Amino acid sequence: KQEVTQIPAALSVPEGENLVLNCSFTDSAIYNLQWFRQDPGKGLTSLLLIQSSQREQTSGRLNASLDKSSGRSTLYIAASQPGDSATYLCAVRQRGSTLGRLYFGRGTQLTVWP
Amino acid sequence: GAVVSQHPSWVICKSGTSVKIECRSLDFQATTMFWYRQFPKQSLMLMATSNEGSKATYEQGVEKDKFLINHASLTLSTLTVTSAHPEDSSFYICSARGASGVSTGELFFGEGSRLTVL
Image (cartoon, rainbow over all chains, first blue to last red; front, side, top):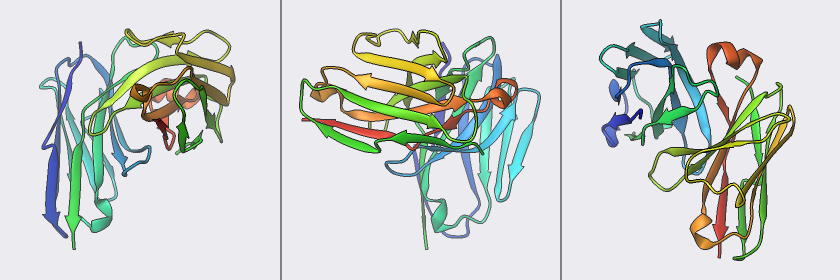
């Protein structure tokens, strides 16, 4: 069974720092990997989607990389801002999963203070 | 990205009553919708998958008769928690996949519904 782990569980940094959030998964037979942002009491906002054939995706200050063979992905946040404070979740879609179910990690709770 | 709307965003009910949560895809047709449950500081756990016009597929350990799912149209899926008990209190989130999502695998999520059972 696929297991997704995110490290660290929580992170608190001053504004302006560059951050790296880590995600690892046990089964490398994935279809894609998706990073989400979740604000307290809210749903999920999709940040980046990386297909299994891709190595990285970029959107603004966010860059996500994927190393499928080692079962790892990183989310890089450049020049962090207080508005980036949220929980970041990574999720993988298993190859062969016809219904597209996602396996989620527990998330990294990020706090960026001014 | 595509917009998925959930209603209500929060609901409080008495033990033994039933509660219905709606999930709508606003700007695309959702051939498949997924219902997740999230406990505090825990990951999202898939409860069931519904395809328009057919019966939902439930994950192991999820009671079909307690969590009724209906996907009657391409833009609406509903989750009904029947005879709710305090242990059913949780955050329920739906997600949807449209035609483009079939190829990319990208899912779009609703805002979630907080259920509190007294």
